[in-house]
Length: 260
Image 1: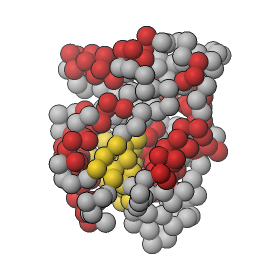
Image 2 (image 1 turned 120 degrees about the horizontal axis):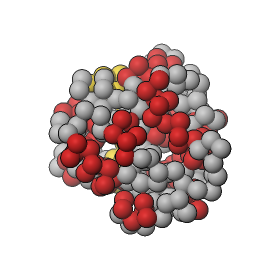
Image 3 (image 1 turned 90 degrees about the horizontal axis):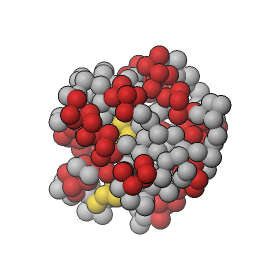
Image 4 (image 1 turned 180 degrees about the vertical axis):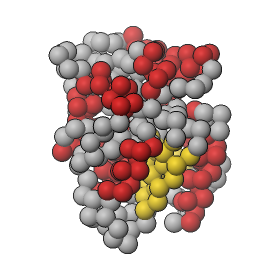
């Protein structure tokens, strides 16, 4: 690691970029610079303030996955050198897309949404996400994950008070167009292309992105000499960034970055 190494943290869907608030100072204490830019149209306030716009935040509702990926590609390209990219969930998918574009020096996809070509047939994934597609509803209205769905998809297994706090602190409305983009060529990567070192992590208690889905994502890559690693953690749901044991995951990632 050089002093100038920057980590670009990329947030997933349904939550605000404040999900990295503990990770950023921890990685900075290890010598990295970090940034965690919000999604377009999610930079205008707290999670509660963003929820207050729902369902009439037209600008967010019109955001597409292509635009979102290009937003982070532009940020990565504007840095003095290629960043280390770490993304969670849909941010993990964008991480894989940016790796495929050659924009990362190395990267970590934490419980990532799978790229195009991996059909997510896992029932817990479908139960967690099908409403976000907004079938038979207007694409010009945003989607807000209900607390009941959030409990199942993100914070299963946590005490009720922690589940409610996580929802109040982080849950935000979402673009249905972005969700649908995950089924299109906007989510494509070239599985055969050589790439920067890439670590994919998974959790055995994750409902929205089950470990089995992450393993299929990992196995889709052609073994072409590129550094590629898969790590499944025990006792992790999709709220992995905010679990009491999040530093164990962070330390594994820090060690992996040092090794690669």
